[in-house]
Image (tube, helix red, strand yellow):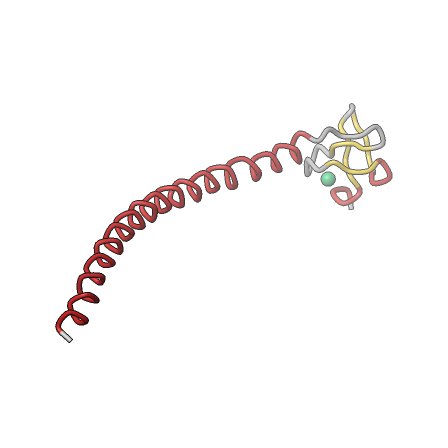
Length: 99
Ligand SMILES: [Zn+2]
């Protein structure tokens, strides 16, 4: 009985040593994962709010008026020429402003 009980203990100690080694390796890998996860969200946050939102605003603001459109000098909105209510010295007023 003593020999049988000693053998498992010895094996469990060996297994425990392996587990400790695996835990250390696992912790190292986990810490590496934490570092990667910490860097990734920061990169995404940096790109999303700054890049896309700004590009959308710019594309909307810079959008030039088309041939059949004009910019109302009163409300500064780009209107279709069918909404041109009055033109005076090259200044165009939309039908809403002249309403
Ligand atoms: Zn207007």
